[in-house]
Image (tube, rainbow, N blue to C red; front, side, top):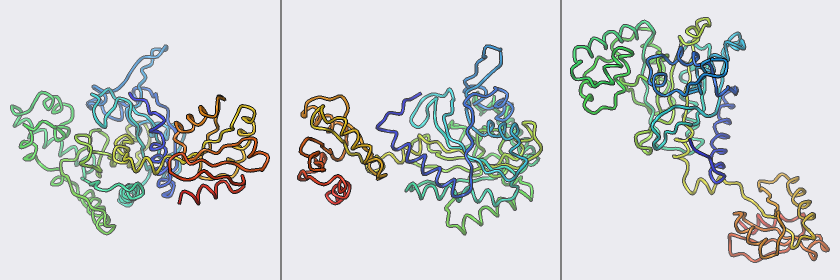
Length: 413
């Protein structure tokens, strides 16, 4: 679990603000969910047979003996909140959330035990139009962020019934080749045969390639649903590939599943993934309700964004306001407040802690501010301020307080 230090938070703020802006432009509303839920919320929804429930959840008993879990993902909690507060009485519901998730995994690049996700969920939309909207939304977000090289993979898992039939066909295939399966795959065979398709064991690659394909066992309605999505993506000029082995790791998915991937992050190349889960609301005690959603990992997106150029672009520009001596520190504080009242793009950092003029200038240099605004006895008598440029070889200037920002902007062009 990692700290996010002050040097890194501007990139986080830029990413979070960009995501919120795009989602709001599509009419999605933020919901804020608790970090801790009853453990049954996840075991019922994610599936007792998944790696998340079996190996990765942080679960503990509270003082009342109730089993609680730090949320490993957000969809189950969002469904719980929708049922508890009657949100599904008015449909469709377009919701999104942001925050930390927790899984006890082996830490590696792009994967931490506390990680951050944005989740997007839509409830009450049956047709393929909402699937298309979510894929267009994510494509727009990549454009807003200036990200290139992300590749979309999609697949259909069919209806609950066709998926169950395919699951049996696949289980029979694995059993016919059980001698070639590794120990992990043999466990998955009993719990969820589809998960073997996700195996990263290179010795199973040929066996997986020869396995029955889900697309050959889809029900007609799912075929039409999926073909409509593919046609719309082509019309929108969103590049994609159909991956018949894409099954996703959670048991509640059905029909459309998708992943946005990159080659720049090594093994942890999936930055956004999701799909339909039309049976989950009913599974958690509600009436049958179609639903679809996705989650994106913020740490992985930040790795793609975190170039030096990006940092420089999105760290707010600052001016450092200081008096020449302790006698005028109060005047410097008042000046800072007047500058903030103007609501410019500059942040205003006021010197605190007193000290000599030399020590004040050292603090200004260390602050990473672009300019220092200096207020002394001469400046106060004339209603002026001195502007010293800290990062560029520009001459020091003196100007009226009312002309300060204009003077800075003009000099830095």
